[in-house]
Length: 243
Image 1 (cartoon, rainbow, N blue to C red):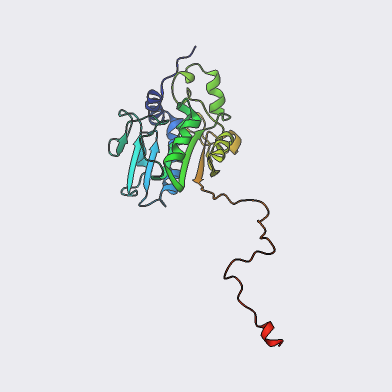
Image 2 (image 1 turned 135 degrees about the vertical axis):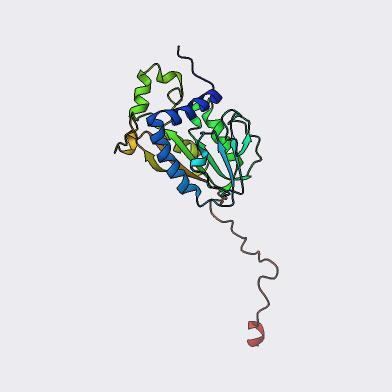
């Protein structure tokens, strides 16, 4: 049996993979450019990142957010940002208190995917945004890691990759309006490949927490024919005119 690291060890290994491998460096460049674009419009808001990457400075704009926190272990959370040492499935954050939640390859290294998403939904304000990065299990790398014992020992290969369609289904159940916004395609050695979305290395999802009001459905209640609410109809003048 292959021993897989816990989530904190996996986050450290993921940061090392981004920094040391050509594939990781190429993917980092693509993801950082994407995150800079989507977060540029979030000035002055409360931001929470669940799971550190180790290269937050590549996409965090100085003084962009009103307040910003990164949830993770002390060994991997960025030193220059506010850190919360906690687990992703039990956030010490007030409900409906965050404008933006970023989950960068978070689910891959967590046991309870549904609970982690529920926590993200809980802390988000109504109409808040969730930005999600995930590894594609159907990519060339996703398939290759299944056959490589070495890849399955360390992150990211040891992670439980989740297809974008499944994540969209889960988010829909939590009343999110979600869509895949882009995909990232790189190959071993860091080469960029013009692959379609189905075989891309990773993907990005943007979701908005919707709050819907319940509208009763059915026929309106009818008033009794002989019932007229007081004040609705005043006295008529027909009787006086007729005589």
